[in-house]
Image 1: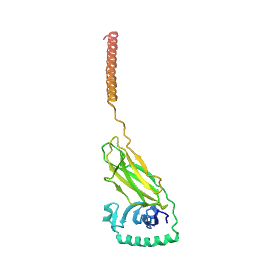
Image 2: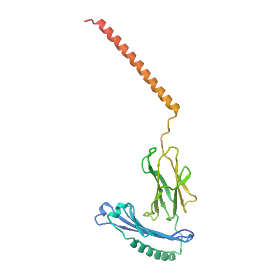
Image 3: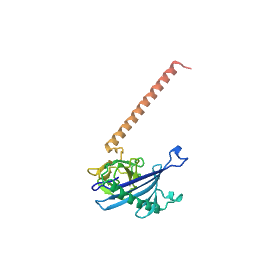
Image 4: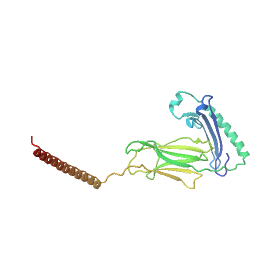
Length: 255
């Protein structure tokens, strides 16, 4: 893909590998990589990652030149030399130059993101949880995701994934915010992208039952007490009636 003024020039490649015995169940290993250049900012970067059935296994940090496993345990079962990804990145840079000339730097269509915010677990007051901001179906892979709590930016504990290429060559990305649900707090995921005319705020706040007021609690207690008293009175009347009926029966049928 190529870009115009300020828009990245991007080369995206996705390789899918299937094992002979895996085709029946649809399992697949995806190798995805891209290289992009933002000429207006004089920036160039890229990405290399492998996934299994669309779940990331690892990616290579091209700046630090090291393999980063999605879960540390994955590195105990296999290995991947980062040098292979660095060689691919060098080839992608060369191919990007060729594509730029071939396309005459024509601009690809910018696709704005779709954004969803949800909690990892059901929300309970005071129970630690994680908010997830899922940003999907956007192009190019230049985006800013941030969090606001009660209107103020928060950065403590925030984690963000790499870009995950989709089959249609757009991207998706996740941002995670650990939090403790507190009554009255609300959150916004702020997303900035060239496809948006202004920063997009996706609002989220916990759906919690309202606390009962003191007057409501007093009324409930009073109603409960009244029902209890009525029950005692009705029970007493029924007992007296039963005793009278039994006494009258005994008088009519003496032994």
